[in-house]
View (spheres, helix red, strand yellow):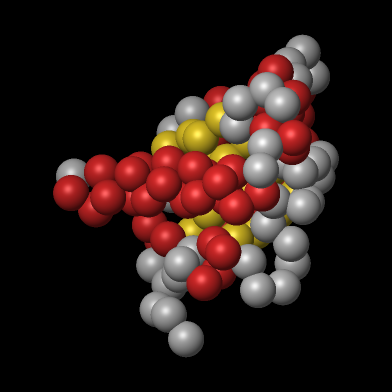
Length: 115
């Protein structure tokens, strides 16, 4: 079992459940601890509780603003490395899409480790 550090924790806030199915995910196989939420209130709770190094957001949830919960979530997420998935991400080829996300998360993790 891979050792997990704060750098490896990933909070994934997206409605794109098919990208990282709950069992045997590529992210898990790559050594990342993936937590997911499908609403901003749940994501805010996870963000506060876990203090992840990297936050991955769907473009739809990234655009949600105008509520106290959304503003607080985005304020706290801005203190972390954020990867925003491009529009139409759910239509991308699954393997390639997962690799793109893992590459982006890995890039942020390496930068955080180096600083």
